[in-house]
Amino acid sequence: MLQPNRLKAALADGRDVFGLINSLPLPLMTEMIGYAGFDFVILDLEHVGVNPQTLENMIRAAECAGTTALVRVPEAAPDIILRVLDAGAQGIVVPHVCSRATAELAVHSARYHPLGKRGIAGGRTTGFGTLALPEYMERANRELMVVAMIEDRAGVDAIDEIVAVPGIDMVLEGAIDLSQSLGVPAEAQHPSVQAAIRRIAQACQARGVPFCAIPRAAGQCEQWREQGVHAFLLGDDRATAFRAMKQLVAGYRRERPS
Image 1 (cartoon, one colour):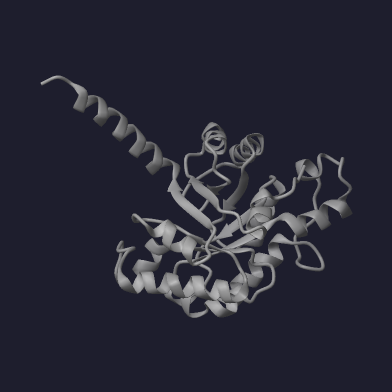
Image 2 (cartoon, helix red, strand yellow; image 1 turned 180 degrees about the vertical axis):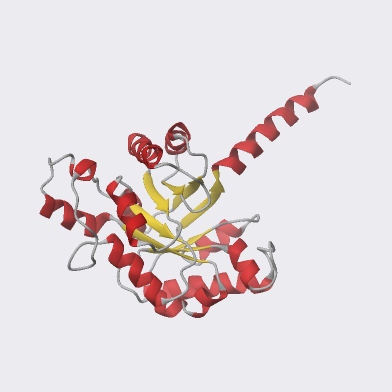
C-alpha cells in the first residue's frame, strides 16, 4: 500500500537527503542501500534491463528498508510510467527533459484527475483493496514524485519553462550527458558544464523547486549546501561497491611485510 513519501516530506522540511542509483537488478542490493542509510534510491530502467517482477521486488525491498524508491524510466512514456507506479514506486525520474511539453507529459502520466490522466488500477498500491480507490488516488496525487533530469543543452535553455510546470517535484542534473550536449564529452567539471548546472539550480531556486546535485569533486557537497541545496545523489551501486572492494584489498596488500 502506498505510504507517505519520506523523501518528499524531508525536502519540504529543508532536511538534507542522500540517494544512490541502483543499477544492479537485485532486490538484495536495494535493501542494502536502504539499510546503509540512504534516504532514497533510484532504480534504473533507462540503462539497465529489469523485468517487471524483479522491479516490483526491488520496490518491496526499498519499502522494507525504509527508503524511498524512485524509478528512472527510459522516457516520458505514459505506458511505462503507468506500470512503474502500479508496481509501487513512490515516484519517477524522467531523463532528457528538454521542454515544457515533456515535463507536462510526465506529470500528467503520473497523476490522476484533476492533475493528470493516469489509468486507474488497484493491486498492491491499494493494499489489494484495503485502501479505497478514491482515497488512494488522492494520496497518490499528493505523495508520488515527478523528477525531471536536465542533461541536454535544450533542457538548460528551457529550464525556466520546465520548472514552471505544476507537479515537477525535483530537478536532477545529468552532467555527463550534458557534457556531450555541450561538446565536451565526459568532462563533468568543464566550466561550461558547471555553468549550465548552476543555471539549472538557480532556476529551481527561483521557483522553489528542489534541486538535486551530484557531487563529483571534493568540497562540492558543502558548496551546494551553502547555496541552499539539500538533495544529493552520490553515484551508483556498481561504482560504490567497486571502490569499496578495491580499497579493501589494497589496504591488506599494503600491510603485507616486505
